[in-house]
Length: 254
Image (cartoon, rainbow, N blue to C red; front, side):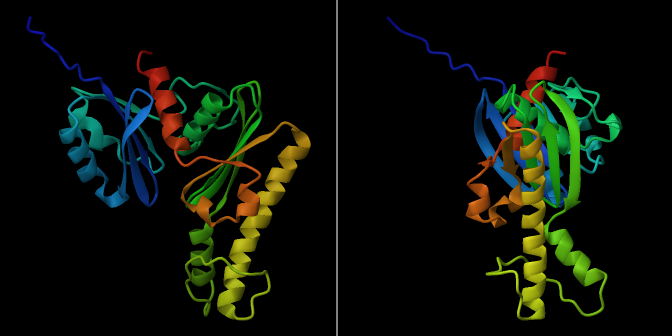
């Protein structure tokens, strides 16, 4: 007896996080990430084309774009692939209590969606350490109550250089203590410990208000924080990917 074995290719889902500096690609088969790559955002369209050519089983794409300028890059694929942009008008897994709902950034929507999926019925503060530092809070009833946006590490270093006559542009180096003994060390200490103090104060505020608070830390600059801070919160490297997959599943049949 001859047995015929047919291999059925599962439909693949592609999630794309278009950031200010880097673009990250996550290829999903079910809940599993098959491929994870990142490129400078200026090479986004070229990388997208290569991935789609390499994986013709891709049937749906969800993308989060902080600039709001890349939608046209998907037009050529729209006849064969379902394209879903992240925005406040899509189906969301939370109640959006943001007063200016249309202005809520796609990156923040994705993180709140991930919090809903990962920590349902919990009070959650999500801290994203990227170009900007964002704080987003969702309560145990899945109501998004807003948050805050603050300059990240690189932005603070650039601001000190740009708005002064003599301060140099620096890259982050972890200072040993808050008392810098040179201009270089003083800048490093000023930026680093100001961010630590800001994070600690924000977490403390929510912990006093919500005693069962869950704190999530994500983003590319999270690794610049000391272990003493990170030990008290949950670190998630692929939190954005999880949020986009959750949103895609909610909207693919809507």
